[in-house]
Image 1 (tube, rainbow, N blue to C red):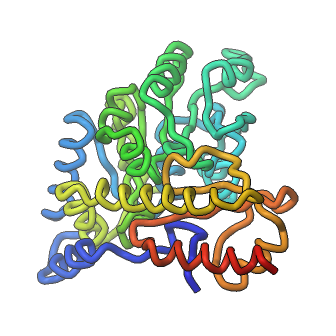
Image 2 (image 1 turned 90 degrees about the vertical axis):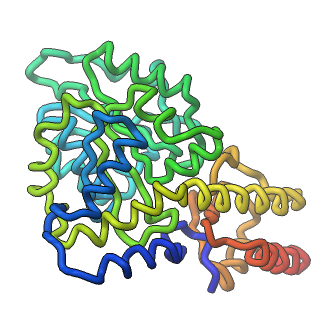
Length: 341
């Protein structure tokens, strides 16, 4: 059964597999004291800036939990959109591991703004209240929308004015950069982001993400927090080596282009059905739309995807780097037959 449920369901880029195989030819020191991790760290510095402090971790929830522990203490609070991954989809892990209160904020498109955040900034220096400290954003958002450079700079300037940090969850940062036709540094370091969770498994890697500390003031405790969070891999070279071709050969960009283009092709095909209503702009590789419930039920017999809001007949379709025109055409053909029933 073909999946349009998530780009987590896609395969591994062959160049990444080859990198892992080549790394397996000899013994190496553990816990990141190896040549592949050193090279990967250098590539992160080349990509995001010389003061960057990168930490390779196992997965996205681990990356977010480590990053938020670095930026936030237990008596401080984390502000995020109500659709944020850390609030909806991580089983409370960031809350448990930081000990911090998470304050969700309602948004129409998954994007936070200074005006939306401002009403939550109160109780500073009052010992009875959690102290607002970290703003969490996703780029792209959980709704597939993308922050512009201007929007990011407005957020970071606002946060720093209140002595707060901005943590960016970049699980799909590559897709956002492709949409904006820019490089990775331009929408992170250059916009004042303090700490980044950098994803790869949704875009061709097998396993592993990175916590990228961009604000040097946050670097001192980072490696200790990673270890205490059980995110320090003993055979780290097998995680690190994947990022070498991913960054060096611009696989991140190539694969994100494929995924985004597939989503636009999908959108154009779905737009031919007057019964279908898109609920969000299609800016990256996720499509949010409503269609008749009978259609959804029929399509779920042949394709794997998720409801986003079942009460509203809203679903989410996600393309990936290995989605093909034939995959999408097949979905559309079945949908046409379903619509005629």
